[in-house]
Image (cartoon, rainbow, N blue to C red):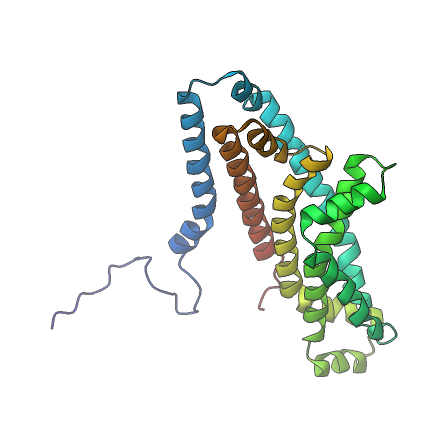
Length: 264
């Protein structure tokens, strides 16, 4: 049997401390944006090589796509911020002794909102709140639809904290608020961030449905393709939404790595 000695400085295999090698880590880090770049480049080459009719040219105009992309990103950002502001404090509140009994009913309502198809929810809101601007209606519907993963993960993350750790912190003289912010939340961060990442990705995709009430976004391009029976327009809108969702999920993964407490 021949034994081959490892080359000094080789980057294959795990380190003695169990962490991934830098080369492998960078490869995993860059894989998703590279896939997105390749997909968008391929799409551009296909579209630019076609002779577009007037309908396709109007829907695939660069300025039009840029405006719809900005609307989509703006809606996603507003919905995500509101969901975070509502869901994380609500999840924390439902783990406190005085309000723990309300966790079941609140999660039931959140589950119902999640079970309703996104298109059905936004249409119901549009009918119920006819006097509100369509953008506000879209934001309200998407916020309600996106709350569940973060609320559920916040509760799960806080409840998995070892009670002995909390009791030890209280025994050291820390207040309930001090224990929450210095012990419980830091230990629950990984689980909470997983819920945030899920919500960001789901929201990016569902925001495309805002087009059905006239709130704009990349869904307009998809809707144009369906209405005009132009496959190229439909595929372009779908690829753009998918690419944006992948990029946002990738950025959320980077944030998750940065915010993940060291040593956990």
